[in-house]
Image (tube, rainbow, N blue to C red; front, side, top):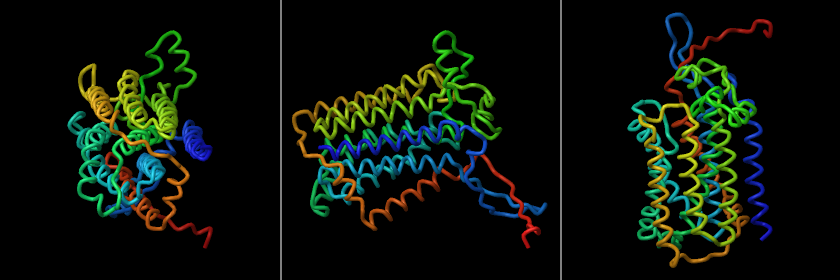
Amino acid sequence: MIKNYLVIGGIGLLCRAAILLGRNKLPRERWQFFASIPVSKDTEGSWQAVNITWYGLILSTATLFAVVVYLIMLGAVGVPVEAALSLMALLLLICVPAASLVARLVERKPATLTIGGAAFVGGIAAPFLILLLNRFTAPFFGAELPLGQTLAACAVAFLFGEGLGRLACLSYGCCYGKPVAAYRGILRKIFDWSAVVYEGENKKIAYAAGLNGQKIVPIQLITMLASSFAGVVTLILYVEGRTVTAYLAATAFAGFWRIFSEFFRNDYRGGGKISAYQLMSVFSVIFALGVSLLLRNGNQSLPVDLLRGLLSLWSPGILVILLLTWVVLLCFTGISTTTYSRVSFHVNRDNI
C-alpha cells in the first residue's frame, strides 16, 4: 500500500535530516554539553555543577525513536499498543542496566556504556520475554504478541536507534575511528575526504587518545548511514509480509556490521584482536538464525498498515508514557560522571 511507503519515506527523511545536521556540528566543542546544573557552592564563591551532555540528549532521543518505530510496526499488524509497551518496558529494564554492566565487564571502566552489549542481551532475551508475556498477560490485553512480527519489529527498530544513536558518539567523541594518517592508497583518499575533526579537550577522543584536532575516520557517520539504510530495507521487507526475513536480515546486518566496523575503530573495547563485542555479534547472528528456522513454518502472515500503527500512538496516555521514558533515559545517559564544571553567576548591571 502507498500509505506504508509514505511512512517509510518519512522515517528515512528524518534519518537523512539528522545526518546532515549532525555531520558538521556535533564534533565541535560547543556540542558536548547541553546544560550544567549547580549543586553546591565552594569556598571561592563558585558553584560545583553537574553536566548534562548532548550525548545523553541524543542517545535518549534515538532510543525513543526506536521505541516509536517498534510501536508503529506492531500497531500496523493490530497489536494493542499496551501489549507492545509491556514488552518494550521489560526490554528497557533489562537492556539499559546491561549497557553499563557489560561495558564494565569487558572494558573494566566504571563510567561507560555499550549499545552493542545491550543489544546482545536484548536480542537473546526478547523471544523468551515474548513467550512469557503471551503466557501470562494475553488475557489481560486481549491479544498475544505475534512472535515473528514482534521480533522483526525489535530488530528493525534497533537499526534505526543504532543509526541515530551514533550522532551521540560524535558529540561526546567516543566510539571514534582510527586516524586517517594510518591508511594508504584509496582508503586514505576516501577517509581524507570524509574525515571528521574533533574539537575540545574534554571529549573522550582527547583525554583517552590525544587525537583531537586530527582527521579521524568517520566510522560513526558511516555506521549511521549503513544502519539507517538497512533499517529502511528491512522495514520494506516487513511491510511486504516477509517477517522472518526482516528479522534475520536486520539482526545479521547489525551483527556483521559490528564485526566489520570495529576494525576501523581506535577506542578501547577490551583486549585482543577480536573484541568481546564482535564475539557477541557472531553469537547473536547464530541465535537469530536458529530462531528464524523455528519460525519458518509456524509464523502467521498478517496485513501491515503502518499508518494505522502511527495513529495508534495518538493518545494522551501513550504520549505521556513516551515522554516519561525519554526523561528517565536522559537521566541515565545524560548526567556526566566523567566531567564536572564550575559555574559563577553575576548581575548584568547594564540591563538594570
